Length: 191
Image 1: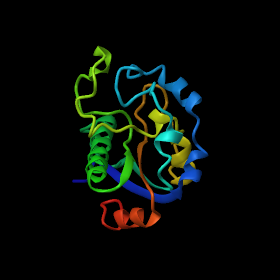
Image 2: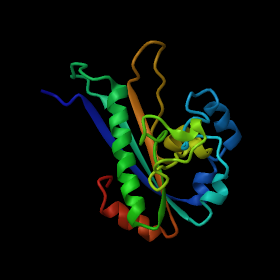
Image 3: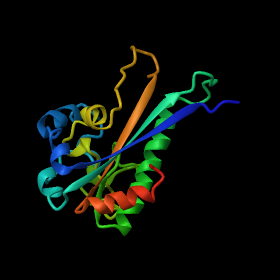
Image 4: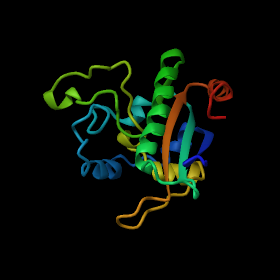
């Protein structure tokens, strides 16, 4: 019996300046506008802040990427997308937990998943303001470019109607001190 999916971890500590080379808020928000989560989830744009101000206190970034590839010997029991969502949420849960005990800001992969129905559409505050996190893309970063240029994860686009041969997810930890990120990485499952 073979494992159905292979998961590869990618990590890299970079300066805040290095990641801001991929900051294109107008372009990314243009993509976001075609998504049903736009202006419907608190984690998704539009936001009442900009990433430059939001991330101003931090100097270093630990990028965490995970690439999922279906094992060529698997029997196609689960869709790659359902496994991807599981991996994405595991990464998000780890980042949210980390943000509670360290002086860091974390950005999860993709949209918030804490509620089945976000209160944003009702004009109410987030139920989990202390746990809800934004993603790199939601605040204006070109995640595909970050993945390929900083983490070395190549993007692959599937043919229409076909399952992708791989999927990737990227989160980030912003800190005021690179040594804190090195310590976090040393003690993490991402090593």
